[in-house]
Length: 100
Image (cartoon, helix red, strand yellow):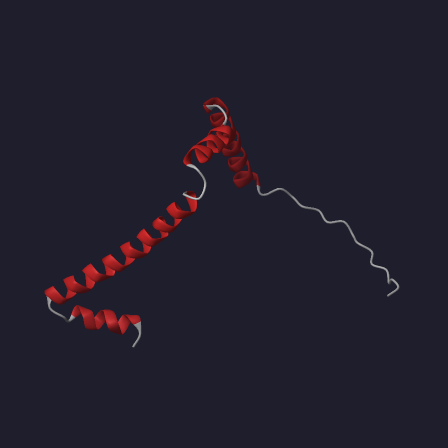
């Protein structure tokens, strides 16, 4: 049974059955998202929280540096969208037979 036939079959069901399907579908999707979130927390828990914060602060720099970098990449992206991507040129490669 394909998905369209299943949905058409579900449309003919009473409202309380539709609500049950909606609830369990939402519950299942939420459970999957929760499991991904939980697994990301356990991977962060392996290093100390202070080390993570210190590395993040060191990588971020000052707010001015972050803003200037964001503006610079924004204008670079706009320029690339308007004028096309950077042109890549290839040089020729010569292959010669070698001894085995």
